Length: 202
Image (cartoon, helix red, strand yellow):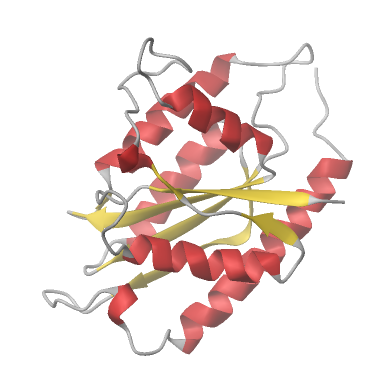
């Protein structure tokens, strides 16, 4: 059964600037593709005028409705963020705030529009905080209806107070490579299962 993944890159950088978050998302996409998952180019949220708010459409000029559509058309969402001040990026937090609307958008059996969708998390940074950031994203994504496979995050953090970025590494560390492969195969497996057997309704 065809499975599709969609990636939101929540870097603070617009397109045209190198992004370590893109590099981490790309690693997960490569591993998902190895399991027959269709992947496309990540979307940089910073390129789009996503209005503040907690509804699915905040009015004229809001770019979220189209991004929301792409999120819900996919079977797997990859949500990628850098770490800033020990936190997910402000762009990532805005995406999560907009997904808050899913809580009230249910079908006739009381299931959120995101039910049956699998989430993967990609985190990069030059400071400690990957576990904290993934915990925040796990809770928020699960709260708005996404399902998390076992080991649903792939992350890398550099040495504190240093300048090396993930995208600048000569070689991706073996542990990151194996973690990405594991996260991808688990997510692909779960997405296929949920596509065949949706959650029960009320």
